[in-house]
Length: 88
Figure 1 (tube, one colour):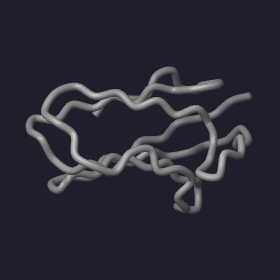
Figure 2: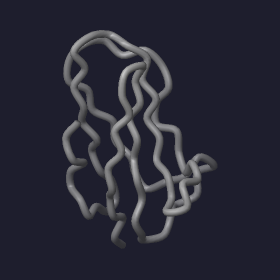
Figure 3: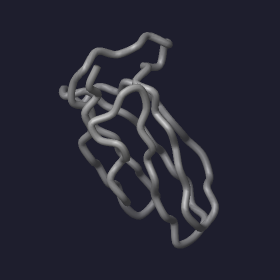
Figure 4: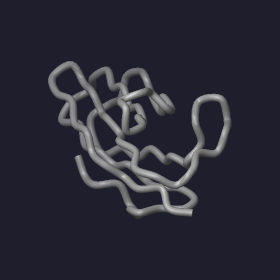
């Protein structure tokens, strides 16, 4: 997993990750309390480099305030979590 770029970000950030083989992937954005803010992807991805963009908007379409958020990338084998900062 690579750090998101840019970080801090406004209005969007790019989350990149590499998979050695095809697998199920769940990518989510969480607030400081661990609550799910936005599900970015839930499904199968092939081997290789992948990118997902998050624009600071929660699941219901509301723009989120500045603050610290976390993104998590989970596969069958591992879960990675990284911090990111939305700065307006």
